[in-house]
Every structure is written in C-alpha cells, then in structure tokens.
Length: 407
Image (cartoon, rainbow, N blue to C red; front, side):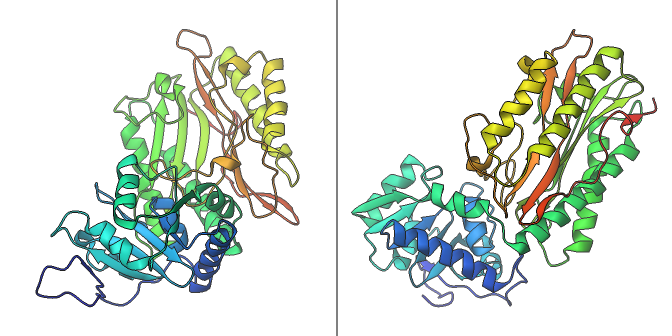
C-alpha cells in the first residue's frame, strides 16, 4: 500500500497535507483503543470492524459522511486503521488518530478488500451488530471467512458511557453554546415570525460560537428544532414555515454539534400569558423536572428515577400524556447516528449511575389538540455525575417566570 499509482489500485494510503488537530489528545484515543482491545481479549477476538459513525468517531476521531458508501475502523491487537472512500481524498487521513486506507471504486467490493488487508488473517472478528446490515454480513463472510463473529456493540457502548475528563470539558462547552443558541432564539421570537426564521437565528449563533471556541474543528451538523402551536406535540418535529401567533405554546430546542459530540437545550415558552389550564400543566412539568434533577445522583438507577417521576405525574393526572423516557446519555451521538441505549432514563433500564456519566433530565407531556392545555411541554438540563456530586451544566432559565415572551 503506497501512495496513488498511475494504475487502478484496489486501495491505497493517501497522505495529503499534515494531520489536523483532533478533538482530543492522541493519548485519549490510545486509551480508547486500549479499552477496545480489552473487550477483544475478554471475548477472544483477533480483530474488530467498527462501521457506525459513532463507533468510528469515538475510537479514531474521524466522523465520516457516508452518502451511501461504507466506512470502517479496523482494530487488531497491534494495529488500527480507518477505511474511507476515494471521494473524500485526504480528509479522513488528516482527521484520523490512526492510519487511514482509501478504497477505490474501480472494482466492486474494494472496501472489503481494504478491510481484509488490515485484519492479518484474523478468524475471530467483532462487529457492531446493531449497525452491520444483512448485506454487509454476507460480504464479511464472503471476503473474510471468519470462524467466529461476535457483537461487541454492547461492550463498546458501556465503555463510551463513562466519559473522560476531556470529554466532560467538551460537553460543558457544548452546553454553554446550546444556551447561546437559546438566548438568540428567545430574542427572535415575535408574533408573525416564522418558525424557520427563529430556528436559523439560534443555529447561526451556535455555529458562530463553535467557530470561535473550536477554530480547529469541522463545523457541521448543529441544528435547531423550534416548534409552535400544534407542532410542539412531538419532541422531534421538524421546523416549518408556520408564523407565530399570540397565545402560542413554543418549544425551543438547540443542538450544537462539536466534533461529533451532541449537547442540547430544550425549553417550553409562551407568546403571551398561558391560560389557567396551560399554566397548570407547565408548572406540573417543571415540578417533574426539578424532582428528576434531584434524583440524578451516584447510585441511583435509571428505572428508579422513572418510577418516582411517574408517581408525580400520576398525582397530577398527567401520566397518560407522557410521551417518552426522562433522559439519556451524552457523547458521540446525533439525531441521525449514535445512542447509548444502556443509559436512558426508562422503566426497562436498571443501569446504576456512576461518576463519569453525563445524562439529561427532560420530562415531557403532550396534551392533544382541542384540550384547553393543548401542546407539548418539555424542559431539558444536562447533569454531570462526579465523585464530588452532581453538576447541572445547563444555565438557561426555565419555567413561567422566565419564558413568557410578550405578544
């Protein structure tokens, strides 16, 4: 494997320019790879083929843009390589903490030939079972012929759930920048303004702040969901061109993305004074939010936190309007990749909270159209669990005292 040749190679190594500054020090990636190799040792594996955006980014620093092409990070007990498509030229190599191999499209399945060149004849291979498609599994068998294939995704997820000090520092910056977007959105709220215009104000403010605070990063993927009226009923409803009206319930949601790391701010607001029914539901959701924040602490279980918030909503006769769990982990994830499902505040997850974990508290209830309190109510803060206690890193204020915007 040498630099580009005048022939049509199946794959090659391309070094175009110097390495870019990565999100974390090389020692951080070395420690992550060491953790993965410990997983390999425990499962008696000779190589691991990571294929998800979050898996590859976590262990290498490279966040790919698939556009229908496959990517990988191949780790053995002695080597690590990212595998990228020729259309990206030298960017993957500049953004990988390890070596990079580029595969070409001169011949079908050069991706798998590049992977085969890295595994050194390994016959016991780990994969991400929640990401590798049926077609990819067939190709793996065809080109690599392993005797053993094991799913390392659960163990890798468990590793990612505990954040390093460097990760927590980045996440804190993300929470700060989410607040920057939130204040820009609040300033843009006016009767007659479209949802999209308000959303763009928040996104632009966050991207400018990311560019200022992280000048060596790739600026990509930050977004805002700003919803009004009926559009607040779902947490992930896209932005529309609906114009704000007096009396609207609003849902402010900012998501700055820094080097693949997700943070969020979510708040309920109103254009003008809410009615009595709306105020009752909003205050009840704020009460649930504050209860949830008090419950996030070392030794608590995800399911146990849910049980107590459920009991509160039941007292308010609102439990039937709850639409999803009460929070989740943070790290390398996004609205289109990644999820540390073992650290979600849901009734069916019994994970114990420990130092190094970062979780949200985000209770939401949705009342249907036609109800006097119709709409979706949601508050969202981010909490870091440390040996010394818990730190709420979200600073944007919540509740009726702060988030009623004059009509």
